[in-house]
Amino acid sequence: MIKKSLFIFLGGISFALGTVGIFVPLLPTVPFYLLTAYLWLNSSDRLYNYFTQTRYYQTYVQKMIIEKKISKTGLIKMLTMVFIILLIPFILFNSLHVRIILLIVFLAHLIFGSYYFLRKK
Image (cartoon, rainbow, N blue to C red; front, side, top):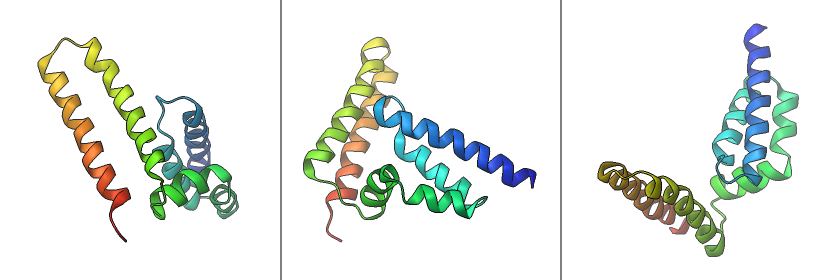
């Protein structure tokens, strides 16, 4: 019973953070929504069913991640946001090591994101 209550509570927090992440680019929506789905799946059928029917879940998880339906424009917007987010520490930190790591992270997003979304099913 305590585990179920804890999962419902944590699911609510991750749902709130994911929803805020839709409007604030620094918070990632999809990981929080995946965590919400996991927590509510293991605690409350009613909350899980409600959550998976919401417009935001359908848009950010179901269509984009599960069905891999994203337009090239959507992919470019997503990669542009990743670039902007990684550019901030790239500019702020005067460390070659940090800059190399940030560049590798961006290239990994570029390569694997493009491969994941654009490859034929």
